[in-house]
Length: 197
Image 1 (cartoon, one colour):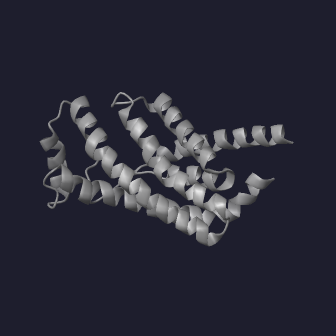
Image 2 (cartoon, rainbow, N blue to C red):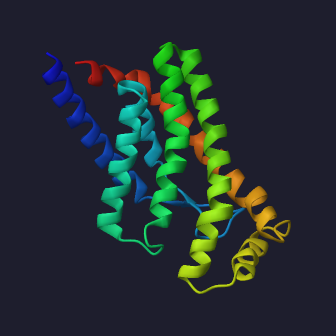
């Protein structure tokens, strides 16, 4: 029985990883951030998996999504962007999955998603400030001032790296986490029986 469950979970993890990869291809531009910040809904599939099979499964689905996207689209940051995307995604789905696993109720799911959004925003802000933006600057041989200038062109409040993170990166992660959480909350109960069969 345990072997059957393990095989079933492996198949479900692989399937959700593939769905997340497909969802990652559809990106929505934002009005308050430079054009290279676009929202995708791939974390919906990952969060569903984290709720259905636990936080570790969520982390594996996130990893599969990143690896498949890496194979399909390659990288422009020598893997730094993909690694950051993995940690930022896990920042949302792992805390949500841990909290929901302890008590499977609507309230714990909402609390878990709220905590996940907060953790994802903090991790996303720190990684962008200290890893991602410097990596993009180096990869494109573009001074940081030029990247900041791209932010200034859409939001006059962005004047340096700190304001870039405060007024572009943090709102981006908050909005993405909120949208992903709402969609997951609407879908999960309807599709969760599939994972229990």
